[in-house]
Length: 83
Image 1 (cartoon, one colour):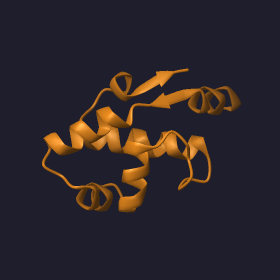
Image 2 (cartoon, rainbow, N blue to C red):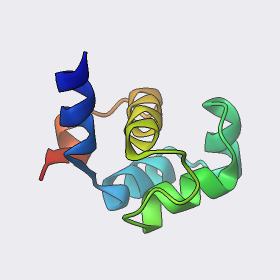
Image 3 (cartoon, rainbow, N blue to C red):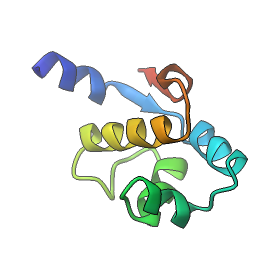
């Protein structure tokens, strides 16, 4: 389990890919947030910032990114990259 957590923390989230996919689906930040049970500022921070300021940890941010990516029909490899 610890190796999985370490690997998630070593991931870089491509917010630009998530944003393009969201916009392609015709969703604004609020609509996507409601669909995946997050706040709109979570979506904004996911798409526009490298840190995890609105998330308790980078691990939680990665989990949220996976939830968003799955909802948008994306392959994880398109928006998650090992650093």
